[in-house]
Length: 266
Image (tube, rainbow, N blue to C red):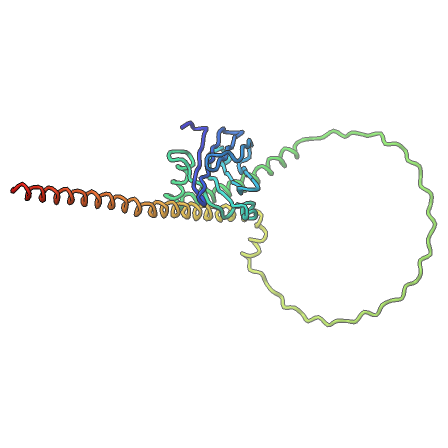
């Protein structure tokens, strides 16, 4: 399989969904259901949404470097879940593909995956701070020339007359006695978090999203394993039935042979 093609498929509610993604930067998405093409779209979005009114929607996620991550199906009634990126049913990546290798790494090393995603969020914060410092350093060292713009002389506006305003009566508002509130001292660590919250929340968000992705992958793996287990007894039963039919047939043949021998006097 070419590295520029990623395929997902899964049978959902007795309908087989098949998605083929071609390309690296500008990708072509071809979605078919039971062999019939439902939607074809080209986009460079790393979170591509393939939406239809009749068949639901697909959310296809790629990394910032273009590596395929997952394709999730949402039924027509799961519009809000599809917009939020939660819920849905993950399609199964083709064995040996990059998406399948990524799913295997997440399941085999969940702690390492969560650590990498959290460090990625922290790196984004640090990169933003360093970028702002670099821009401020460059701006502070650039001397802009003074430019005198010739502005036209505007005529003076005439003095407006003073309008007599009526004296309004004062309203006797009641005096409400408010109790003295206690002086609450906020702990130092709470104040530190409040002051640095804009730097902390991207890291926390990355960690939470990583945990959600791990749970999603485990749920998908368990569902796939359950489907395989359900199909196994039926296959074993069919094999047992075939072996039983064969033994019955051989027994019938043996009985017929014995009866024929008795007739011949053997």
